[in-house]
Amino acid sequence: MKPAETSGYAAALEFLYHLKIFGANFGLETPRRLAALVGHPQEKLRFIHVAGTNGKGSTCAMLESIYRAAGWRVGLFTSPHLVSFRERIQVNRRWIPENEIVRLVAELRAAHPANAVTLFEFATVMALKYFAEQKCDLVIWETGLGGRLDATNIVTPLASVITNISFDHQQWLGDTLAKIAAEKAGIIKTGVPVVTAENQPEALAVIEQVARKNNSPIVQITEPLTFNFQPSTSLIGEHQKRNAALAVATVEILQKQIPVSKTQIKIGLQQVNWPGRLQLVERGGQKILLDGAHNVAGAETLRAALAKDFAGGKPVLIFGALADKNWPDICRLLAPLAAKIFTVPVASERTMNAAALAECFRAANPATVATACDNLADALNASKDEPFVVITGSLYLVGEALERLGLSPVDGSERGLNEWLAPKIHK
Image (cartoon, rainbow, N blue to C red; front, side, top):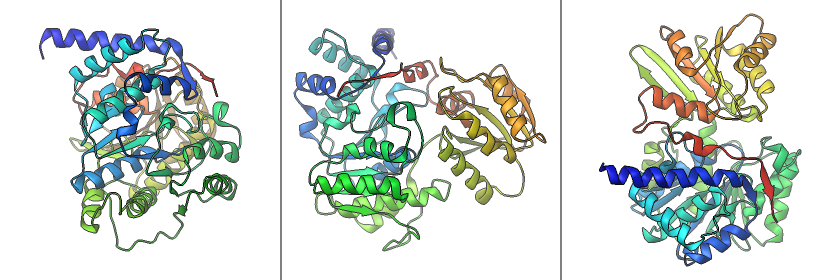
């Protein structure tokens, strides 16, 4: 890379870091205004909009892989990123190039010189503009936080997908499943089909009510899962079968608009790649499982996966969490799974103290040895001779692990762009 290019990219990143001072907004006025200033790029694109508490990213990755296997040009917008900001905006699973980040930042700054826009709002419109320029046939479009007032909700999709509803971000989305479901169901648009894997009556009733109000046909994925064929996915975990069923049902609903064969669906699911979510890597004779179990439902999924797919021995656990998550309950769920636990701080202003995490693990399971480490590097060194290590908790920690294990093509200097201040609500 030429020095000038590096300098330009560094300056663009510096501007994006600057946008963090505006925190996070719940509201659609600013992203709509910014999109209008660059020509309403969302009107030139087709979307599948995906919301939910857990499984959004995996479902998005499956949808992207299926449509790409069918020969379509597919945009993918997700967050947060594990290592590089460029992960958030991909076309056919290729990260947006650095020079395109530089250009888009300059063009959007020129269109909106006041700069009173949040990082996520800015990134959302950057993605829209890039996908339109790339002439994507379809965009797999993941919400950031919630749905109803999320910046991504300025689009009208071909289908709205709601993976599931569980407790996370209660301070902003609500303290009941019904309230959280109402925020997620806010992506439902008039006449646009809805596909959901939610099965809890309290949350499902809200989704169904919003769908009826919008005259939107709804398809619910129920247990036991049924398919017209038996798909398998490359991703680990029983829960991924439900995500696969959700993706397949969405593809089938949209067959008239975007045809995909059964063979292409199978290929897409078999080739899907989604780092940091029950991702198993081997280093020498050691197995390392990386999983961003950052809420209670995620911890339960990890526990189930360890029991089914990795039975026969207790792993060593390396754990770090953000202070605004329900870390006490996560610790209680994971404490019985490991005889030895190393707790670490997360590279975030919102990190939970490692010593407090270790104390919580010991209280939950006095038989375990829980040790607080100063950093992830120390925990990895302390566990280097262990046959099986699970690194979990925050996705920020998983991103750092990918870098330290040499599994990322770039350094982790951009992980700080995941930081945000408490959201403000502007309806």
